[in-house]
Picture 1 (cartoon, one colour):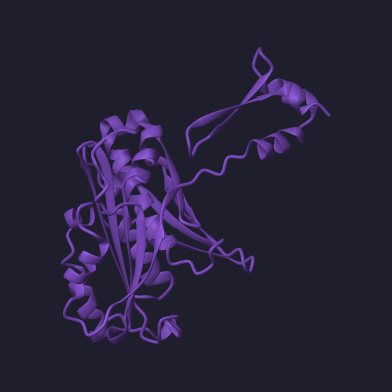
Picture 2: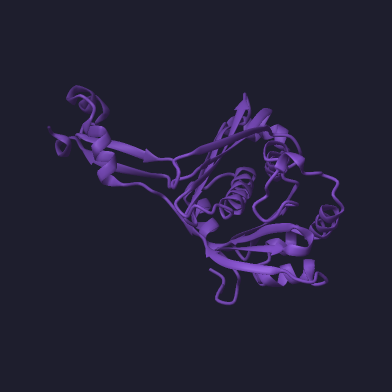
Length: 302
């Protein structure tokens, strides 16, 4: 394992550019990303896809003002190589997994396009707000070259917020590192009021988007470059850039043995016995952390 003591990893920062009516987020994932990918041992193409999805989940999730709220990113596809991709964010914790057809993936190019992986696919982004109990969901086609293009389209089309998204992923000395940049134009103030009247060709936004487009994927995925340094590189000529509080990112899996037992206990005894193996143990799989939890049927006795 390489020395990461001086590296900027596993955190997100927010920022605003008041004079340009813009806000943004930057994230960098390292050991957290590595730990998630390691338990799945996916082929390179799927590993890169999940790394991008987790980075996007952290980027969008970090915009939640509800600290107990949850952001879920999920794909839907029609006869695609990737059957299901799910990632979520809650309180700085991220997790994710992919279900795919290994035989069809073997027939795809080494660096498959988004269409090659998903075919006619869709991206669903869901916000669950714990404080109000409200849920918001938007669905957009999986168009473009990258998953980031679909997330960008979600904000532009569904939220009416001009948005730019950039993501970089690399393996350095055996460590998986990914970084992301999200820029948004909020002409009616930092809360983005009156979104339906937003103009996509506003000169302020064109200026910010042009600067954001200069950010390279290699810079985003370089752990030796602090996120604040990248911000300075992009916007050092602006009159003011306000850097918001940093958010630490961690691997999250909410498996709870007591909860699993309570769910299984609701099944009739004969169904519980049918689920169990010859040793009287029910194996409950968690797709997120790739762990099977053994539950003895005897522990579930009424």
